[in-house]
Length: 93
Image (tube, rainbow, N blue to C red):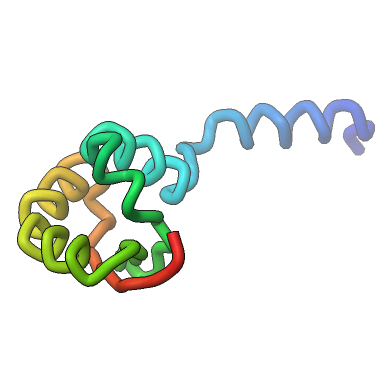
């Protein structure tokens, strides 16, 4: 039977080899594709079943982001193929 030191070493090694969580990937990609001005008016609120939820701070920004949805979604899918849709809602940023 392996001693605890070997088991812990093996677990840590396996954990470090895993790909980053999809949320971490999404946060990094989001910073790449959304400019600073836009980021001030929105916040990623979550991802579930490939759907990314984003809160925007006003109906005007909701309208603007819905217009740009296709372009943003395409860029997200190129970097993270698991993403299927992008949903914008007005809420607290």
